[in-house]
Length: 226
Image (cartoon, helix red, strand yellow):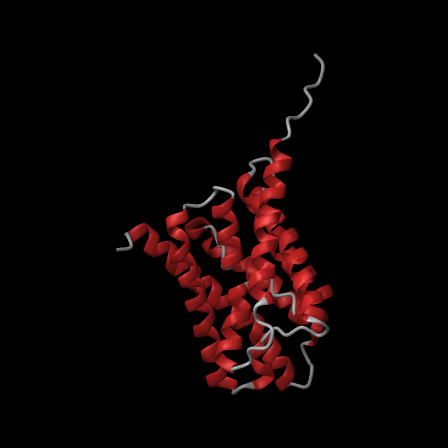
């Protein structure tokens, strides 16, 4: 049975991930419906902004993961209870699927509901998603666990990273960096091509990014002479 505190955190994750998928993939759908009015850069900015505002809204409640890969990486680096991982992932997937279902009800199966698909080879997109999520997790764990980092500006740093990576890498892999963001529209739209890479790539990249920061932080700093 889920206790009240964990339930509150799970609901925050559900709402935050719902917002991410509704706004981000919604921008892709509306861009297709409107003949490209939003544009690729606008879509990338939308993803970055929705992450930023949802972190500000729910970060103090759940930590604002909104991403199964991030939750797994935090747990692997011992910054999150392993027992809470299934609850967080279930909430994230539920929020993402609800958002995709609502978008399909509103617009139909336009643009495959924003499903991420590789523009080139699956291997190329797998490597790109791994590297993108490495840097995203590196930023997330630094601002979330190190008091010397940016503190209250964490949302800006993380949202900026998501927006930047979506803008420059989106045309190749879709710049998902998030299994929930990819699996929900793929499931609801019935577009299931190469979805394995949007699970394996982000999870591998997030875990590597988390441990990279842990290793760097563990290196002792040279003391200044008196």
